[in-house]
Every structure is written in C-alpha cells, then in structure tokens.
Image 1 (tube, rainbow, N blue to C red):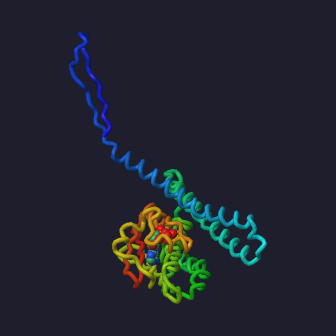
Image 2 (tube, rainbow, N blue to C red; image 1 turned 45 degrees about the vertical axis):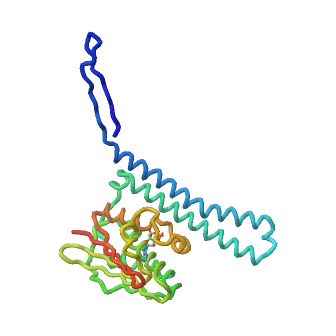
Image 3 (cartoon, rainbow, N blue to C red; image 1 turned 90 degrees about the horizontal axis):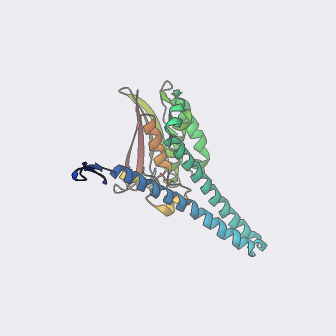
Length: 259
Ligand code: ADP
C-alpha cells in the first residue's frame, strides 16, 4: 500500500485529526515488475545471438578467414544468428504495436474466406514441411466459411501455429489443418503428431518468452514470443484459443470465434 497522511490542525495549532488514504498499488507494482521482466528478457534474447555474431566475426578477423571451409561455416552461423535477431525484433515491434489501443482501433476488419486463408498458409509453409518430409493435410473445408477479422493478423496467427507444429514434430510427421462452423461459432484447428507438451508446462506456453526447452526452441529459430502473439491477436479479435497435448503423441490448438 501507498499511504498518504494529512494532519488537521486547528487555529490553536492543535492536532484535531488525520486524514489517511490507503492506495492499493499491487496492480501498478505488478505491471511495473512485469515490464522490467519483459525488458530484461528481451535484452537477454537479443544479446545471445549478438554475442555469437561478435565471437565468430572476431575469430574470422583473427585469421580464420584464411581457411575457406571454416569461413563458410562461421559465416553461415552469423547469418542464422542475424536472422534470429531479425525475427525477434519483428515480433517485439508487433507486440508493441498491439499494445497500443490506437493501433488496435485502426485495424481494418472484413469478412475473410477461410478456405483462401488456409490454402495460403499451406502454400507459405510448404518449404518448411517439405524440408522435413512431413505431410501437411488441409481437410476439405466448406468454401463458404467466413471469418470477420483482419487478414494479416489471422494469417500471422495460423502461420505461427503451423510453424510451431512443423518445428516441434519430427521428420515424416503429420500436421492437419481444419476449419468448421458449429453453433454459430467458427473453429480452426491445427493438430500435429509431434513431441507434445507436458501438462505441467501447458498453462505457461502462452506467456512471453516461455519455452519448454530453451535449447530446442533456439535451435529451431524460435523467439519465444510466437504463442504470446497468437493469444494476444486472437483475444483482440474476440476469439479464444485452447490447447490439448500429450507428450510424444502430439498437440492440437483450436481457435474459436463466436459469430
Ligand atoms: P518458440 O519461439 O520457442 O516456438 P512459442 O511462444 O511459439 O515460442 O512457443 C512456446 C513454447 O511452446 C515452445 O518453446 C515449445 O516448447 C512449446 N510449443 C509450442 N507449440 C508446440 C507444438 N506444436 N508442439 C510442442 N510444443 C510446442
């Protein structure tokens, strides 16, 4: 609590009373701490690839450049790390934009064909699932299904979920994308038969920078912000996201939007 005290003193300079105001600052304090946490996490995430870029550049300058094979290997690492930083910065900028009420109110919403969106997601993700020899199945969905939303946002949401499904599913695995309408609600589901998420981690996966396995996420090029962005956007659009998962069996994310 923050406490304000104001004494009441009469004409004879006698204390006649005290006004006390107790201000509950728990939420302010919590928000502040969350902000500090966020900045420290973001800085750490940016520093990790940068340190690696710096290290490999110095090694190259110190003589490794003479060895073409080694040079190639190091430059490849530098390139990957720079891509990771780029992705993280993009995600951070999007989060900052979404935090602004003004930006959110200006975003255009329109009726979108889910058939078109899901086909476009599959097309955009094809290099990634083909590289892992995975099956990416888009179930035959009703071509009339429409969702009132913002095109870029909903595309980003489904692409993020699709990228995760690919990342966290071994080679030759299977990912199934589906959409349907039931009781005036539009559902979109993404199901994989990958590594799954243990029940103890499940409640936290939508938190910013939370990862079940830091090393695996980093190696796969994750920023740790993907699912927090997904949930943020879905909630702004008035929808809901649910997840069920079983370790070594797979994970299913279901988005739902009431009409
Ligand atoms: P990241 O950039 O690390 O993928 P996300 O916010 O997208 O960050 O996801 C948070 C964590 O949730 C991941 O690090 C991973 O441990 C877990 N996760 C997300 N999607 C899946 C999935 N389809 N299968 C298994 N684990 C997943």
